Image (cartoon, rainbow, N blue to C red; front, side, top):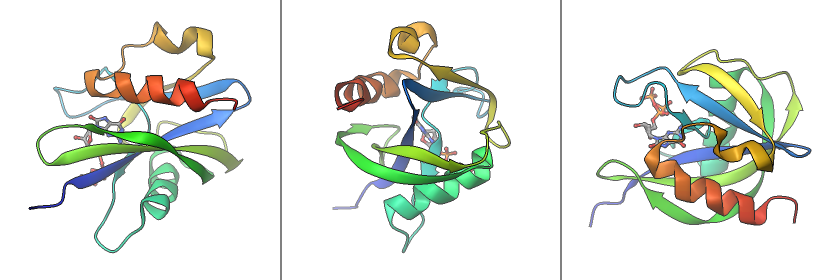
Length: 131
Ligand SMILES: Nc1nc2c([nH]c(=O)n2[C@H]2C[C@H](O)[C@@H](COP(=O)(O)OP(=O)(O)OP(=O)(O)O)O2)c(=O)[nH]1
């Protein structure tokens, strides 16, 4: 069986806030909100992919903290896996793939229009947040 392509999503946490990112492309996803991240490249660990993607997309240095249990199907052949992460240096900016960022408290988490496939992942993040 063909292995799915893993997309890593970062639940970047800063105190009581989670970073959400609004996609600027492709057209069918643009305007919807997601966890920043991207595809794991061949030969790369998911943790390394997460650090690389956050540097490329947001211009920050971050480190993975822990895997959020579960995985969520995306388009055919892709699955989303999520790690909590913390900022080590820099202030996130929407450099690539996104046109807006928002830091959300748990009370604000559903104020943004998450991608359909991210809703279950964000719920899972809420269960591990601040434990
Ligand atoms: N990063 C990310 N992608 C997601 C999420 N939910 C979701 O459906 N996706 C989809 C969007 C894309 O089709 C795919 C990830 O692709 P990407 O474009 O972010 O990854 P990438 O930076 O490695 O891509 P590329 O431009 O190098 O091709 O997964 C999510 O929460 N985070």
